[in-house]
Amino acid sequence: MRDFAAIDFETANNERTSVCSVGVVIVRDGEIVNSFYSLIQPEPNYYNYWCTQVHGLCREDTEEAPVFPKVWAQIEPLIEGLPLVAHNKAFDESCLKAVFRVYQMDYPDYPFFCTLTASRRCLPELENHQLHTVAAACGYQLENHHHALADASVCSVGVVIVRDGEIVNSFYSLIQPEPNYYNYWCTQVHGLCREDTEEAPVFPKVWAQIEPLIEGLPLVAHNKAFDESCLKAVFRVYQMDYPDYPFFCTLTASRRCLPELENHQLHTVAAACGYQLENHHHALADAEACAWIAREIL
Image 1 (cartoon, rainbow, N blue to C red):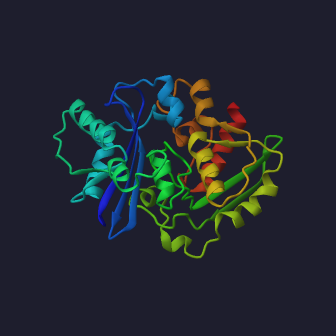
Image 2 (image 1 turned 135 degrees about the vertical axis):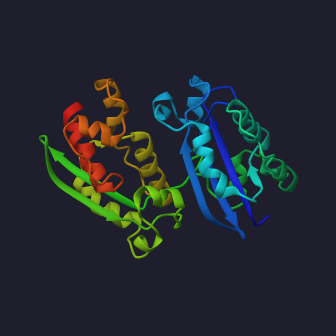
Image 3 (image 1 turned 180 degrees about the vertical axis):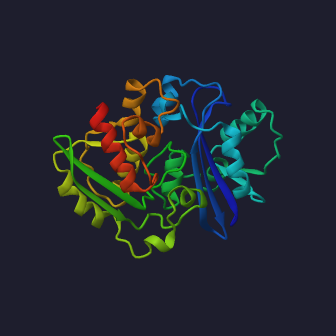
């Protein structure tokens, strides 16, 4: 099969309707040409312990995420005319059908293929046919299992150094992403495309400049779950030893300290702390806003 859309759902609880994240990878002529990832506000909106243990997501992560119909409106044009592929089709297809039903959407009866069934037929010698085992047998090392779109495609980084409550240094760099392609939706958010990072350094060279700046300091991010997972993923991809940095989250802290806000997105919390974020989704501007928030509430 040369043209298809690989899809993976994670769920918040035992209900198939409770999809809380989705990853889609578009393959044409045997090459990955696009990808999409989104958190989703699950229905029903609660998490059980075991699902969180599997994928690491909890209610705080999806509190402000879009509902499924809004997410699917972005996926639909990407997969048009393509068959869907999943590892354990029985799970992912049943999730898709269930969430279509719960939102009273017409299900288009997507053609759906199963790599679990195919791997049992084509690779009977494997000790098991779990996703990471089959992927390894096919030459792919799955580093972030149970993240719906596992990759390390960081394309820029911003770092702001705060000492004694004052910003004393900052650093920004473009990065050549791995894998080295851009999807439409990420470019829509941050404005970067492949031309921007064509001659950018790879991550290890960039991190060699950041490492002495952050030595001995805890790291802070707005939505630690995202930034920490990116950092760990790209360390793994380049086979670098991860130093287990202490990591704090201004998103979690803002929900605790500023419960009256209408939402806890970065620009909203920054404004409540007296900082006007003018260039949202530029890595350095976001880091400066996060530093300002951290001084106020951490």
